Image (cartoon, rainbow, N blue to C red):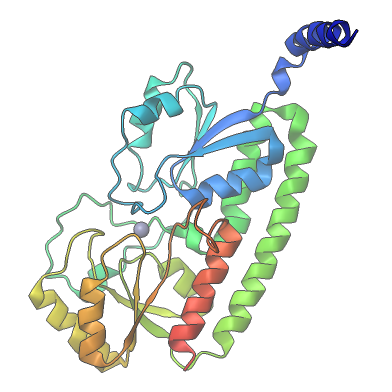
Length: 302
Ligand SMILES: [Zn+2]
């Protein structure tokens, strides 16, 4: 009896399976974890999202592997930052069976220039950067008003039947971003200092939003250890501007940051620009930004 019921259920499922095939979740790839999480917030269970750059890797020095070509072979949408940061993903998805829809979250956004240029023009440009600062995702308001709407529109285009669901999810997430923004404002309101030195110049949008100042970056290009001469300049600058907090990053070596901190009797704390699915306390966009806020308050609140 049990077996007959089981067989019948199987037959029904197989029959129904054909007609509901359209309802399979949309497969999406995002280059960095924050974008993957934002897609998940909007898409809910209507999407499955792959993060291409693994946790622990810098968003700038990552080289995709050939196994990742298989990972993205059947995505219908891919989300990148753009502005020269992760445009290699365009080549990666070229191997997909059907060309997926691209979303570049920086396109159409007024970008800042990368900050380190203003400090030390004498460092030669060794990387092929456009000079536009790609780190817009570290400003919750740009996420709310620019990235979320763009991702929502893309998902709706791919699955119009889910449009009201996507819009509801987006609205709910945007409310949470507004709450995050309020927390950030309250958090920085009590700071004693506003200047800091960053590991790489990832924080200009966040700094601009909250009245902070990323005075300089330890690594003018992520992964490139600073020269001794540059370190001397940084120490001088830190003294001149009264900077005592050097923000290192989990993805990059903090040796140079330690050297500067020792010289200016300051402290090294972490700011994390990308987080990751399996990193406790930084495993969602909101958690990541709350972690960063708590580090800022720790470093500059006294
Ligand atoms: Zn970066």
